[in-house]
Image 1: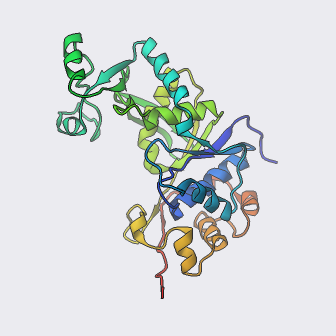
Image 2: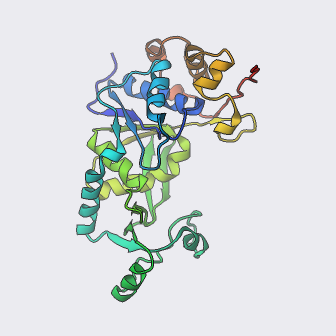
Amino acid sequence: MPPIDAGAGRFAPSPSGELHVGNLRTAILAWLFARSTGRDFLLRIEDLDRARAGAEAKVLEDLAAVGLTWDGNVLSQTDRFPLYRTAITTLADAGLVYECFCTRREIAEAPSAPHSPAGAYPGTCRNLGDSERERRRQERPAALRLRAGVTEYTVTDRLHGEYTGVVDDLVLLRNDGVPAYNLAVVVDDADQGIDQVVRGDDLLSSTPRQAYLASLLGLAPVEYAHVPLVLNAHHRRIAKRDGAISLRTLALAGIGPDRVRDMVLRSVDLPSGPLEQALEAFSPGQLPTEPWIFEPPVLDLP
């Protein structure tokens, strides 16, 4: 029997289209991590940005087709705006929120602090005076940013060890009134009792920002595991333009959901078959650390 942990893991896809093989691989790994430690496994639809009609139902259908099971109801971020507003109010009451009027172009063209990554916010609006803020309000609506008190933060990752990344004054609320991803994901995980986050390692660099924000909100730390991505034959991150990468298109090539599941399991050195069978052999310490190079079959369609 696995050790029983009070908490949950999760998979949180965006309903922007069909899941591809990389998404399915990450979902299966998140399920294995959660189930191997006795955690619940939850699904959350991250639909703050525009969702494609029917995509959520297709996402759930595809996850079930490869054998994933989940606990409780599937939640959507668009139903949770009051929680995000409460978190922003908490930060604002502590003096940790300010208005930002910068456009993306202005941020891109502004000089950055030494050693800051591309796109890090340079603090242009951090110390605007009252009159200047009022003037800029007449020109365009403001986003709300976190007034960060650190420039970097360290997290511990199950696969990567200690990782220190840059923290800037991240956006909390976009100027169109939509909560920002970094805020929403932190609030959602805490509210759902999620204490284990397994996701692609392309998101590792954003994790220090999220962990720091969680600490300001007094939320419990999360256990992270950022797993290797799936790359195409050119060793670039897999994308929809790579062809037969969704369950639907793979099925056209004669590759059904069970075979896709088995391909994913073999890519992490686990036996083919039902996920419950793979769970018996799963050990996080034995996961491959290199990306999986996936070459989709050539479709021969009439």
